[in-house]
Image (cartoon, rainbow, N blue to C red; front, side, top):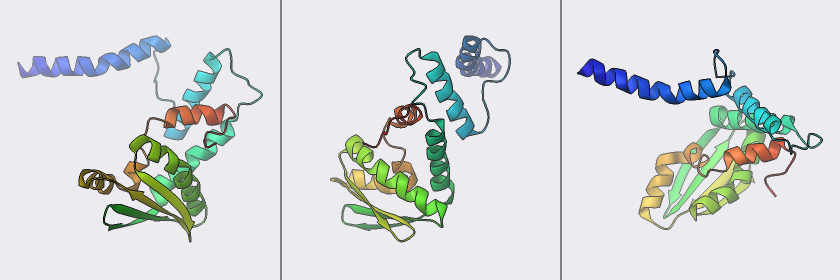
Length: 175
């Protein structure tokens, strides 16, 4: 019984991968490599499949630069968190290019985070990075922000994929 259940679970897990594998018409691996390379590869394929792509505006370098910023912020930034009432302050810092990446990412993401959540979100440049303030209305929201921390709240909102397409297509997604 346990063996049958395990076989069924493995089959269900493998089914989406097999479907995607069959969809791509390849017997080889599906993963294109390191995550930034894979994200670029995915966007290039989407642009290539779209007959309306204006190749004179495509800017994969802008997407690559943004992905580098994401990597630097996620892996090298330091966050100090403080609360006062229902306001959470994230002081996000780094050295050199990390500080620059923090400034670009946090200031660009704040309005999107505010729209996605209804919280009041501001990000102000500070020495070595950014100070982000998030004001919430309830204790439950406060607990959510504190539980997620800076890196978790940066993932909120289903805008990232569209944001990457806009960047690669030569659009400025921040305006």
